[in-house]
Length: 441
Image (tube, rainbow, N blue to C red; front, side):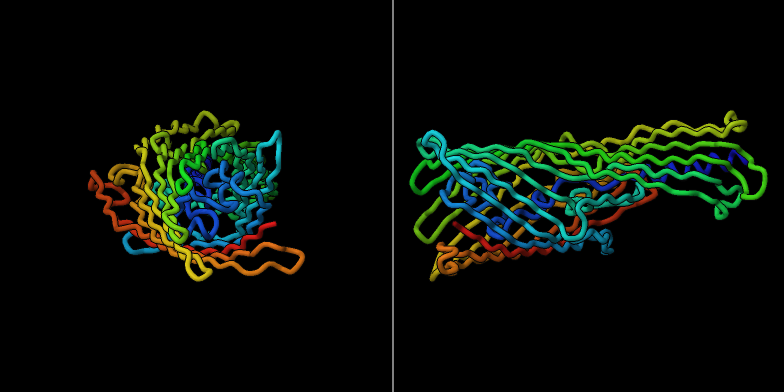
């Protein structure tokens, strides 16, 4: 009986760490980068004219001879629901900073540039949910990430621009170690010393772009962003006696080792093509079409390694192997984006629309990785102000953006009536806003 209870405790710890963490990519992928890009619904692969090119298309960092510094703040507030109940997906907010510095080499213009999103809540975050609990797979853990990109771009003859760089994302890896006496049969009398060792890890992935001023009024461009899987690696170790403090132990120097490896973040490989047309001195229209390779997405639930040493009771313990994880069956998607900009009376007015179909099938089986189609409508404005005397000679620009993403209701009807979760409906809205100041030297 005692060995059975000890095995039950070990199994409970395994189930706690086996829950699947939410997964997807970075906050710029979710909500855009910079007020101008957000206001035009992300249609920027050929139309970015600021340091947001460090995210949208690094080739365009070489399009201007000016030193450019952009500083902004952006936030997003989601309300995503299951059966009309809020799932409490965290908001995202933080600083968005961009830098581009041009130079000359052998008569060609070069530029180095960087983009940074620095969340003001957490540099990185993981969240563990029960494996059967429905969660919005593309949003839940996505916003709480430090995003950094560094790029090099060049202007070639005939209006051609090329650029490439490396982007960085952050995550954690850690160990929790407990040593002492594990209370048995009453776990509340346990006397354990705890040590936590957590490291901040980074993962790097490539990005590249090209742009061509095909006509004086038309620019076309394309960009590539590499995909990646970021694994979260958690280790939980207990060493010590099992019994009641002050009495002879039931087990002397027992051990429990549990390692949980799960997919904490997934970013699909992305290929985007687009065009920006300056139809008149006042009107600019931009269109992008992006392809996201979601078909390589794997079940993010944890893979468990469990080791248990109960000494004389070891032969009485039988820990069954972990069952194979069900496949999520995500599919590739194409995302169109349309943005317009109108200049009048010293001000710039912007609007944009994007449609992102869901890569996830309806959750009819054992998985509950929710996603819905997404319609995004955005508006924004910008204005130039005079520079600061002899310090900053060129005008300073201020931009604002406001966006609304609507996730129309989707029904997930289970194939098996005895499913422990049952049928449910998912829906939601996300409100985004940003401000950016743009400085030129």
